[in-house]
Structure formats: C-alpha cells, structure tokens
Length: 527
Image (cartoon, rainbow, N blue to C red; front, side, top):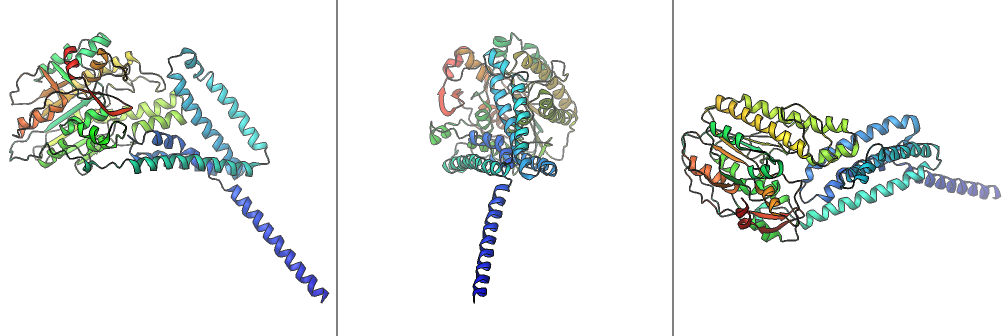
C-alpha cells in the first residue's frame, strides 16, 4: 500500500514537473518568437502612409513594405546561422531603427535654414555619432545573456507602434470615405458627335515649368526665344497663361475635368485635408472619357509622377518598370540609403530611365491612320530631381538638400530644347497631329503659402501653354487659363459647344486644401 502511494506521488511529481517544463518551454517559445525586425522594417512606409493618408493611395505601400520585409527576412536567415535567431533579430532591429532615425534626422537638419543644424546633419557629424552607436550596440547584444527577454520587449514595442499606425490609417479611411460618385458634376454632358476626321493628339505637360512673368522676376530669364520657336512651328502661344490652382493636386483634376472644384470645397468642408477625391477625379477624368467615347486609343506614361488615367479608360501605360509612388520611393531611399551615391542610383537613375523611355517613344512615334490616338505625357520636368544640366548632360543631385534655383534653371533650359526636339519629331512623323503643350503650375519652393505676396501669386499660377491645331484657325488668345483648354479643343475638333468659363484663380494652403481664396482680380492686375 505504501509502495502504491509512493508511486502515485512520483507520478504526480513527474506530471507537475512536466507541466512546469512545458510552461517554461512555452514561455521561452514566446520570448524567442522573432517578429520585431519585420515590423520595424515596415515603419518608414507606414509612417509616410499614416501622415499622408489624405493623399497617398493605400495600394501604393504594398510594394515598398513587401521589399522591406523580404530584405529583412533574407538578412535574418543569413545572420541566424552565426549568432542565433534572437540575437540576429535584435541586431537587425537595431540597424533598422538606426537607419530610420538617421535618414529622418539628416533630412530635417539638412533642410534647415540654420547653418549649424545643416552642419550637424552632415555625414561627418551625425554619421559619426550613429556609427559609434552602431558599433557599441551590436557588442552589447552579442554579449548579453538576456537576448530572449529583450526579444520579447522589442516584439511588444514593435507591435504597439505598428498597431497604432494601422489604427490611425484605418480610422482615417473610415472617417473619410473617398467616393467620387457622391459629387454630382452635372454641368458637363458627355457629347459624342459623328466626326469623320479625328486627329491624333499629343499632350505634353511639363511639370512646374514656370511662366514668362515668373521666369523674368525670379530668374531674370527671357522665355521669348522659346515662344518664338513654338510660333515658327505653327503654335498659338497666348500672351498670358495661368493655372486655376497653384498645385498639381488641384490643377490636374480641375483642367482634366474642365471644371472648378468648388463642390469639393463645399461638401468636404474647410477642416478636411482629404486629397483622395482629387486623385480619383484625375484618374477618372472627363477629358480621357471623352476621347475614349470618340474611339481613341489612349497612351499614358510613368513620367515620374504616375501614369494618369484609370485602366478602364487608358489602353496602355508605358515606361512603368520599377514604378512605385514617387514620394514613397524618395522616403524609402533616404531612410535606408541616406548616402548621395545610393540616392543617385535609386532615385536619379530611375527618373532618368523613365524620361529617356518617354523621349524615345515621342521622338520615334509613327502615324497610324487606322485608329485615332491620344498620347498623354506628363513629364516631371523641369521639376526636381535635377538630373540634367542645360545641355542635357547627366548631373547628380542630393535629395536631402533644399531645391537649388540654379539647378532648376539649368534643367528648364534643357527641357525647352528637348521639347522642341520632340515637337519636331512629331510634326515630321505625324504632320496632321494636334499638339497641346502646357505646365500645371509655376516654380514654388520660395512661396509663402500662409501669407502670399504678389510675387507668390505669380509663382503659383503663371504657367506656359501653346496649341498646335493643324488646318484650324484659332483667334488670338490674350489670356488662357487651363480650365478652358480642352473646352477649346473639343469645340474646335469635335463640334461641341462647351461654354468657355470665366477665369478664376483660387489660392489655398497645402495644409488646408479646401479653404479656397479667390485671388482672380488681384492676379489680373499683377499679370
């Protein structure tokens, strides 16, 4: 009997020890579960999305986050064979956080107006500080015996930060449903007439190409020779060309839908900064719908700012290799590769390749009489990054520094030359084609958005425009604002009767995009 009781006690003791051992193993497994480096790897992109959800499509973050996680996982697999899974995870998280902090700190310091802060943001100062941390940190993690406990703490921190960011993004999208259908733009009917002769149309948009008045004020540069060259090529060049909004985000949806965006301002309200609706209006724009209704084949390009047009409207989007959102790419590179050499390869080279692809297409296109064709090229020129000098030679740029006026002017001069070269090729290969040339806004880095001066108004709205309408007589245009650009084209070639709208020029601060101030009268006096 005693022997039986002792056996039962032994069994209970073994059972208790087994449970304790199982519990300890479970706790150890929890502590050894490596998650934090992969979550930290997604932080730069998630931060950008969380603070820019009002203008950044959520699908644009999938590729950069995937690249971050895959790269981190590959490095972890390599390191774990040398130092183990927990220590390799801690080392990766340390270096990811150092890269993330270094990139952001350097950007903030280098773009400061304070020369001392700019100096502190140099690689020689900030780089040395982070290098010391990068040497001491791994030494600590490799020597510590608390790697599993630290791993657990890092997991909690990473989950908390990522969870907060995802919650904020989700809350934004729940609070700001981006449905274009809620806005009733009934003022413009889709008019389709029976037109036999439909010309090929080439649209060339030069992003941030300043107008004649601004170039004279800010750069002491005369645009007259360029305008004269356009006139020699049978272009109508208005005396004054003006955008209706001072930024791409509203200028594009306005003139591509041939409307003012007052309904957006009224319905979304002054507190909103939701820019997803203007983005959708741009991609589902009325102008391309109109061309599609007239059986045009529509081609757009990834010119550094995305290929405009919904896939249901556009037939082909070219030059798309390596394409992710431009702002995401810049943030990604400056965070993980905050060295000018790598920035040049990963930013400037991609931009150069895309532009070179578009140049090649436009200078070698041939007339296809079987189908009318709309070629829509929105080029990030002379907008930064500044990768060309005035002769078209490649130059390097530092994206962490403020925009350089001299580099802008150099790239603008090259843009003029390249534009004329493209126009000559189109007119040679497709002589009956319409060519529409314009910019979406002026040069803006020096603008005071909160309290704009007279010169700031000119900077925001003064653009270029030129129209080549073969076999059509156009009246002289003293002034052209972009909202009427396509109304003029459709009335001329598609026999429509769209009203030519009164010119309005609406100012807003980028942080308050739906608080519009009508500066039309003041701007008219300045121009």
